[in-house]
Image 1 (cartoon, rainbow, N blue to C red):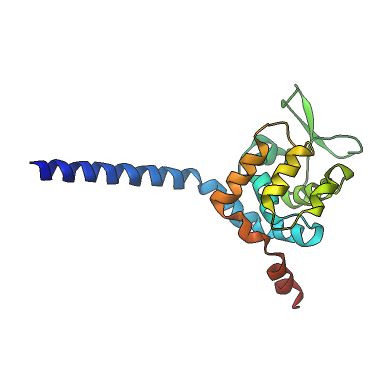
Image 2: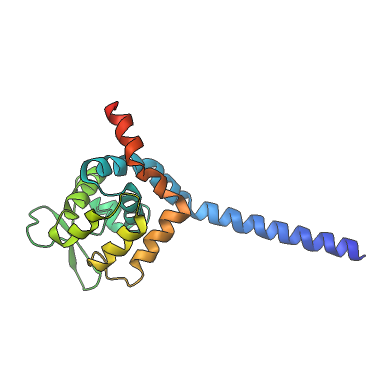
Length: 183
């Protein structure tokens, strides 16, 4: 009888673990699809602007809800960039820190990625470019320190996304450079 109870308990535990694992995998399907779809775009931006692809992907995933947020679907804005000064393009109104804030609207996701890279070229973010391309933790903490987001846990969220999905593998600048230049 003890043996049967032990087997039943083991079976229940195994099924519970399997269900939990499947739920996590299913919940992450949108994240994996987003990574597959935009990893090359993030690496192209890394090559051109020296921003780690892992950071770009993690920010895109976080800010756009893996491309599913209203801002991403209606404005192609994957990074939560607000209008700010100097923006003359289209915008979308959305409640964020305040009511009816203006967020940049793009014609394509590629345009959003490009603008994100240019946005990080501002003097406010200059200290980030002193960091190694492989220092995603430093970049994540630096983005928070430079005021990219208001969430007190922004850096930790980016780091968790990068580590959970192995995004740091896309930061191999040397390998990417040699594949695209033949060097």
